Image 1 (cartoon, rainbow, N blue to C red):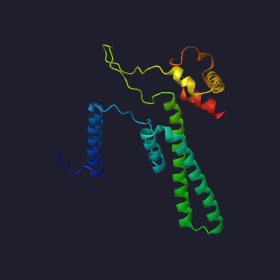
Image 2: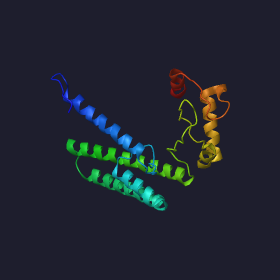
Image 3: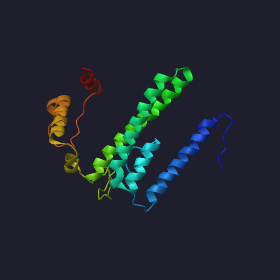
Image 4: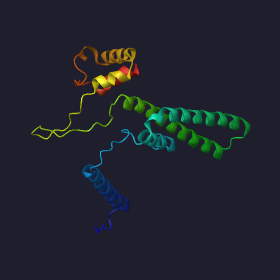
Length: 197
C-alpha cells in the first residue's frame, strides 16, 4: 500500500491509481493473444454510436440499414421537438434540457457519420488501425505502417482526389511534389493565414 503524506492531494493520489490501472490494461491488451481489432481509433460514446459499433462487429452487412434507421430516428425526434417547442412555453429549465438534448443529438449524428465513413473504409479492406509487423530494424523502429495508398484511392472518386491534390498544392505551394509519404514542414502561422484568408 502506498502511503500518502499529509501534503498529498487526494486527487493526485486517485490519479496515480487510475494511471496504474490504465498501464495494466494496456499491458494486458498487448500481451493477449486475441486478434480482434478495434472498430476505429475513435471511441464512440453515444448509445447510437455504440450500437452501430456493435452491429459493425457482429453483422457488418446490416450496418448501412442501421445507419439509415438511426438517421431517420434523429430526424423524427427533431421534427417532434419543433412541434413540441412551438406549443409549449420555454422557461430556463426546459431550455437547458433542450440544450443538453441537442448536444446529445449532435454527438449521435457525428458518430453516425463516422460509422458511415468507417463502413466505407472497411468495405475496401482498409484498416484504420493497421497491425504493425515485427521489425528487422536493429534500432527496433516499428513506425512503418503498411502502405494503403491504392486502397485509399478507391474510397474517393477521381474528382475528390483531384480536389484534394489541388488543395494540397494551394497550401504547400511548389513543395507539393513527390510521394504522399513525403514530410513537408510548414509553420503554424503560415498555415493559419492560409485558412483565415
